[in-house]
Length: 430
Image 1 (tube, helix red, strand yellow):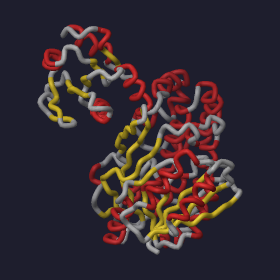
Image 2 (cartoon, one colour; image 1 turned 45 degrees about the vertical axis):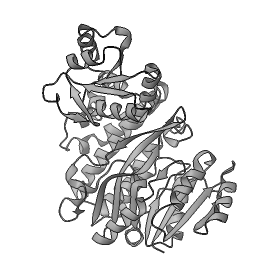
Image 3 (cartoon, helix red, strand yellow; image 1 turned 30 degrees about the horizontal axis):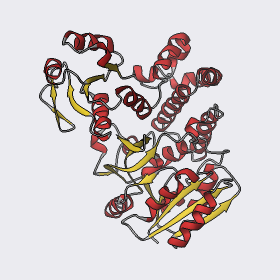
Image 4 (tube, helix red, strand yellow; image 1 turned 180 degrees about the horizontal axis):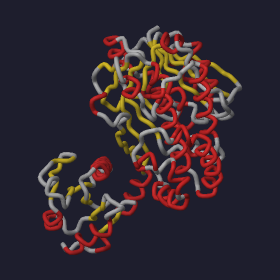
């Protein structure tokens, strides 16, 4: 058996069938599909039983423990494959995901091989996808990563489910999941340890995994889990201590990751829940202050750490600006505002190109893209030439214009009105 795909399940009936079928239909056939059901009370168990009749590679394991980490540890222990992949029960794999990752893992003898992914949402019966790069540095992709500084090159901030892990590597380093209750961000410690300890890795620059962001039952959306992220960080700290890790660079990475996670958690919560978490946030930061203050960090990290101690009100105001709904959720709201009309995106930066892609997927609503920058003019995005604002207004005077900038939205709106675009046809993407 070459690859075991572990699917942790808990009341997952809505998307479970298409999830498992994406594993069954992999072009790589030497698979074990291990479905670990942790005490589901819906129809998840029946769905797995039905699918087992169609494919004998599906193995069902039933356990009353609802902990995500517990299910994953059972899966790793029972896996017969030489390599392990993880598939969340509301997500899907591209048909060649395992084949692509396995070939790279075998070619380079990599402990960890992973890929980029797409976020996906269903909008009025149509699936919309937006690609996410796991690593900011393009130099990390499509080559073997080993030798010096491999730890920093391996440190992704999300997405354990885009990876293929050598089982002997996990066993040799005794890498296990935190068995805290429910699904409570146990991926943080696993992702950190695999990135830290992998001697060889390979990162594929292709979106091979489809991550659903509109599942209302997702643990990310659970506001009852206010403090669990702190428990996960404490678990990781104890793991590093237990392993005798003393090098400063590794602890620097730990504290940076910890406060990035704290900030993410604070921003995802409602104001009332966020205020409760903020007390723990501030207490932890004061406790870690002497250690964290030794880190070399830029304003980006400062806003997530000492700004809270230096100016709490400013910290909260800045965080409020980031307490936005996910990109695809906001994109769907924008589509509702456009109401099926043709549109031009104003702004050819990162956000604008993502919006252009969504409009193109949604019945090809995009007529064009424009930008006021001379450097952008004449370039190509999504198969369309970037126009000046004047050119776009002259060519598409009746279109809806979506401004891909909240910071400069007012000024950009004035530009459009000066070119004759009615205010009713201008939307600021927020």
